[in-house]
Structures are given as C-alpha cells and as structure tokens.
Length: 52
Image 1 (cartoon, one colour):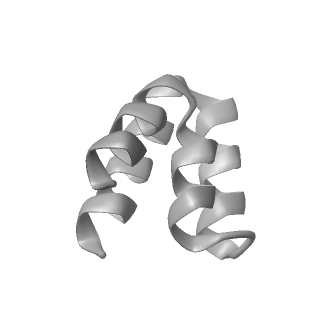
Image 2: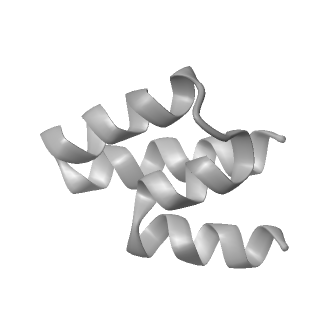
C-alpha cells in the first residue's frame, strides 16, 4: 500500500499525505508547500509516507 501512496504523492502530493495522516497539520503544510513549489510538496509527502 505504501507504493501506491508514494506514486500518488509524486502525482498529487496532498493526496498522498491525506491517505497517510488525514486532515491534520501535515496535510495543510503539504498543501502550502505544494502551492509554493511542486518539488517541496513531493519531498514532504514522500518523507511523511516513508516515516510511518
């Protein structure tokens, strides 16, 4: 299941974070990072998924 989340995190970073943690602080932080730059959003999403 983590592989699917990582693929989704690369395509749409907030979706990957949402599937991992739900509507928490990490989700909103990822939305902000994705809006500021797509790459920081991907890095944060993959980090959140790999950490758990």
